[in-house]
Length: 607
Image (cartoon, rainbow, N blue to C red; front, side, top):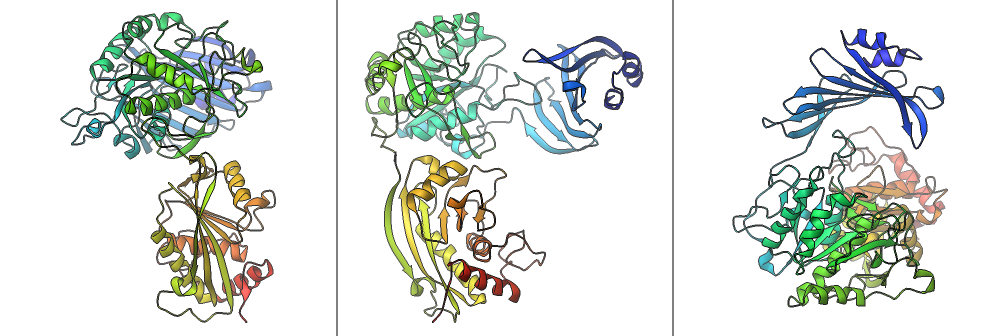
């Protein structure tokens, strides 16, 4: 089938139907993107009633890609089963198969190998919710309803903060599938590529509001008349704050919700303004444009307080602008990633509301709403046309109700230095021809403990000692920073290095990385920093690095020897697979380390 589409410049219906053994071409139409024709779409039907859609993507008449989907007959009509993506040479680039359970619900997505016969990865779509023994709200938390595409309740950061009934079962609900598994999956774009928005917004609420306990709801996209039932469910669960980081341009989607929200003035609804780049006073987006006394509409702002690029604005409809650009959140895969937009601005305000309500549970919704608005800077003259109240420039920068302030700037806590005696616990430094002094920085809140770092440095020092190189001094620096600096990131890490101006070589112990591909540790020497000199002679170790001491020695060698290649010797320190048994260095490697490190001023010959 795919070969028939790829092989001809203008594939005829006969060629396609012949390859499909009696298939009938139902339609052929231009494939358009932003008013531009980029290819052709074929729709075909097979003898058994199944349908195939083939998109031949050929901008400027040059075939680039073929996307074929197969939908089989089912009790409810047809359901998608298979997706194949092929390149211009008809080579299969990706294959995905939807698997259904006995009730006809989408169970999982199988990522197929190129021959489309075997699954190499299975992505669940509706896994069971892990149970826990206790209700998280007994610790005095504030229940926050989270209405989105669901959450990945398997992730420890999410699972530990879910509201549960006395039996340990999840309190939330999936109003899309009508079950008790509000798993993060929104196949609005494609059932083979579900969007995973909810986990990201939920993680931000939980990060900025340590007192928040999540009540997750998967919204009923195909039947928004269920929204009143969702609101009533949240009310029965004791929810006072509901975050809705979503919306649409159809008022009819939200009329049922509007009536339900109006009938529950005891609940504060925090909604995102949207990211259409429009004035929603003139071009409404719902529910953001609803006129409700118990609703706060929030947009994302840039550093100056103006609406960020792409974010909506509205002098009448939008209450607040909140910085929500380049925000670190936890994604569906459990990795931290960088996000932007009004969805996250709303999540930040919901977190703020939870912190305030935890300290003042007696407040009415209007008192809570007013307290939030009172924290905003009133708009300057150039802001008047954008939002009604003003900008919350740093919702976490000061103590807010029951939540402590989070660092808004980089502040250093000097911890002194480790000497040769502390770095070599046997009491005697090894014989050495050269010495190396390290500047070690670890970020508060990144999960590292001082004794873990000391253990890693000692292990690395013992490994490098075989080259007659002694790590004889370590300056230890702890820094308190905004959360983003806990991660290796091109822009953020540049600012951090320039702010601290460490001596070299410098080692940063961080929580994770936002670079792609993601490595558990990275080294920046002379050769690989020609365009990023600010990162030169630094090593970054994440919490995933294991064993940390061997990883540190491995990355330090990259920097000290300015050598990026890896060795095939399974016991060599520089084997690509770092392990506890990979610690040996050859004579030539030691010679290069000493020579290069001395030339670049990273090592000092012993006197």
